[in-house]
Length: 385
Ligand code: NDP
Ligand code: MG
Image (cartoon, rainbow, N blue to C red; front, side, top):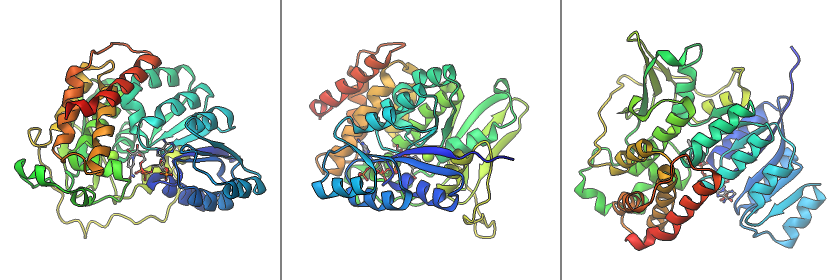
């Protein structure tokens, strides 16, 4: 079989998903050509990556790049985009057939649309893209015959469980959740959570924003919305189950009573690799699941009264239109206020709730209405403290 090289553009290459992605690419040099890398501000790390992977383009969204770094990129033959529009520019102007979108937050939304416009497949880690404008993104992807391949471990598990199945036979999608570091804490204690405590996830090593989202369980909420968009199901077909060992990455229940699950060691490289190599499944040396080590797999119902963020996301998913975009933007601002020690941990869902309640929802929004809703939430959240 003739192996074609995928030309990939990696947005967020210096982050947790981005660096894992490059490790995989390093092991499969013949299958991938890294044509572009994009970051926010970690230029030194980007330079290191550029020396190893020889991209043609890089982007630095913060715009903070020294003259000497620019010169080094130039000497390496790399074109640099920098500043607030760098991510969009690299998405529009570079030549790739697969985008790995691993930036964090709403910054990933427009680049996803640009990639679809160019007909490039997308390995999507940036769940915020689908929360903000999932209906629009999936409709455009369908029109352009572009594959949106999930990197998020739960969605990769669902994607794999759905292989060979027809969508009419799906009864329920069961998203598993670790429950985060505060699974066993009382609701009252959540007001005393420190930044350090919230940044310690029991099973996964991830970027700061998603780690806080996991602690509030907003991450699972965003994943509920991500799932309804990716798999075209109604929110009522999604169930969240707490599974503290993070071995079952998610499941699909079918109309005959059968349930399919995907299992594995909690290691993001597995879903990243599958998204990169799809439709093929390739050999890896990642750790194997040793059932001797996991003598117990347990399940619990999530406490929606304690983890209000999860309840809010279900609600925003039910409302639809611009509500999920507002939920997402308000959450981004609230998480950053918490990380900067401006608000308490339990104020994160409170601010998000205020934003979702006060927002005038627009149904069937276009791109500009989604961006306007996102901006409205960002400008107003702090007033709700
Ligand atoms: P990190 O914080 O580790 O990395 C984020 C990356 O995005 C960095 O390279 C960062 O650059 C870059 N970035 C951030 N903002 C911008 C911007 N405005 N413009 C350009 N680049 C930007 O995050 P993660 O890797 O943990 O997460 C990335 C995405 O993947 C998130 O959407 C998350 O929800 C999702 N995800 C992550 C998982 C994980 O295990 N980490 C699991 C499932 C989903 P710089 O380094 O310069 O700051
Ligand atoms: Mg996940």
